[in-house]
Length: 320
Image (cartoon, rainbow, N blue to C red; front, side, top):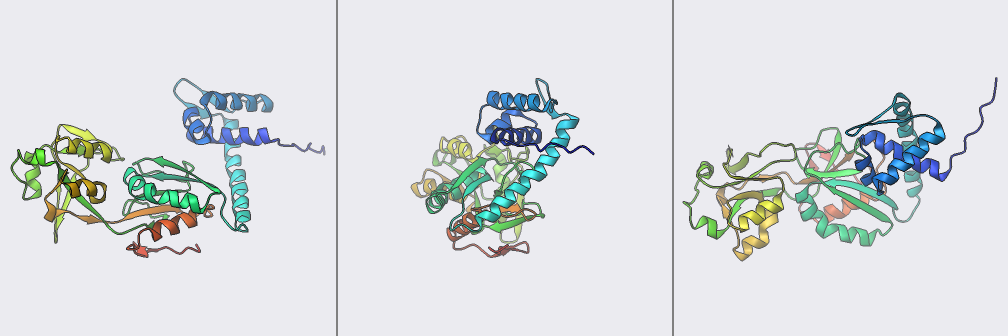
């Protein structure tokens, strides 16, 4: 029986194989190039070189889509297993270090990025200088395993049950706000249904639907499909339009505290402002926790002393 020659992998081989793995998973040279931090042309060149060395076409390319060939799909599956083994081995080695080292990839909704990371992430980077952090701001619910993220931050109650969800602060208060200039020219709203006679700045969520505003007063809970000539898909623009007198917007009270203190904005229906679950960081329970994530969770929780230790039956244990 002939003996197979031992294939020696160079650094370039490993780099190109990882690049191919990203393209095969994301089905896009552009997205894979962003994830890898290189240009699409450099990535395309690397894949062509890999195919030439292997003597096999790995990807079918058209002007619109990129799909693995049969050989490419088989290779991608084996590489996922191999690179996962390498990642876990490096993470085990990291356990022997005094401080974590590596790279954390996070997907964070826009409100969480502004209210949590802008204030606390610089402190984390100062405390753990050997950890690099990449943040993708995205209001869609992201499959962090499939998209290659280590963790995500979303609102409590929106995270799938098969993830570990860690609360990062106190419950969040939602308010409808508008500028005095807008309100002075309109009849006051005394109940949520009165908003149907106002100009509201509609919100399209990360799931692609126009959000129906929620209000709560004691045990009375109401949902209103508000009218409006404006629709936005991110909080910052909605606030800026409200400041300009374009209408009423709906957002977290924490996003507009300074505007409320200065009187630039006023709360509409203050007695109806609902309080909903806090921000949560979530990660896969089926994967070993990457270096730095435990420390980031602890810092984010320490920055919000009013948080609770459990939600929906999930308790945060720093040793899990």
